[in-house]
Length: 399
Figure 1 (tube, helix red, strand yellow):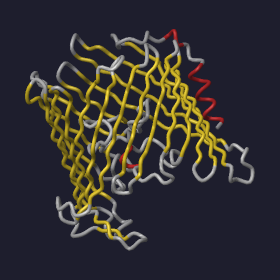
Figure 2 (cartoon, one colour):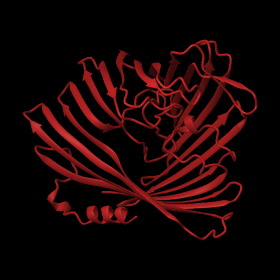
Figure 3 (cartoon, rainbow, N blue to C red):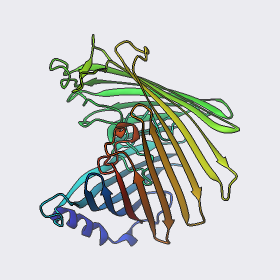
Figure 4 (cartoon, rainbow, N blue to C red):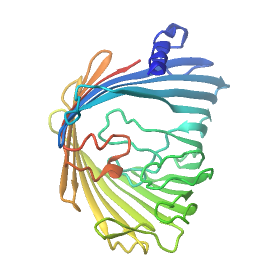
């Protein structure tokens, strides 16, 4: 806790006037910026539970312009946070134990010109056409309900090349990422690299298609003690077309190179894990109502099979989102998820108001008492805290 307070104090007293203004990085420019977030949550599930917290993300950027077309720049930021919780079931429900941590958030260096980008370090990698239910959420954990889009990064080398016809090629390699990412349920085998790539190209003026691939060695010892290093291959496909309304499809297939992989749960039911397929179809349209009502609808089908694409056992989720700008400083967002397998409805609403220097969020939710869509919704949120009914208030200051 002392370290956390020291870091906050240190960055708050930095002579900001020594840094460049917060515009596009110019020749040999140094920029200091950041975000301060304060939140409070009141949740009622089986009992009343509350939480308050503070997150501070200081960020430094430095850029060196080399000639007219070449730029070398880097970014470094930390996720520093502290928070406490209280529970009505505890012996002393008013006690508020404080927990905090300081973790690197982004730390990368990049070379770029008009057509090439090479970035190495702790960074965010995401792609795909889906907005809410994302089969290609391979490396991030962004929750569509999170207005800040917070997610941990991955240690990677990413190379992107952009052709003049808007086709672009991605090649990446990952190393040293101990925790699961995105849809993963098993860790990567320790001290083994991951690699993959993606090609994204326009088909016509109003449509584009992408094909992605990723390979890693997964530690499946939780299922079989002998499966500490088993190959995992993923293939992804996404397509979007804008004609009358925006429509897209996004799909992913994950395969483990094993003879069989299954898990028997407490009820005796067997879940096959050798092949996992997920497909999302979606569409969005802005209705001419008031200032414009943006509506997004997505449907996700997930299958886990011993034989690829047999679709013997499937789960389905539908997501519906509305976004409405109520004025120059106010926005209203709603999300509804329906779990067709368990027949559960998840409800979320967020009102955003912008002040000159702050943004204020008021969020409310009414969900089942047990969250069963945690991986689907995104891994950046504490889904256990969002079980049942509750309200969250959040104040954000960007500088």
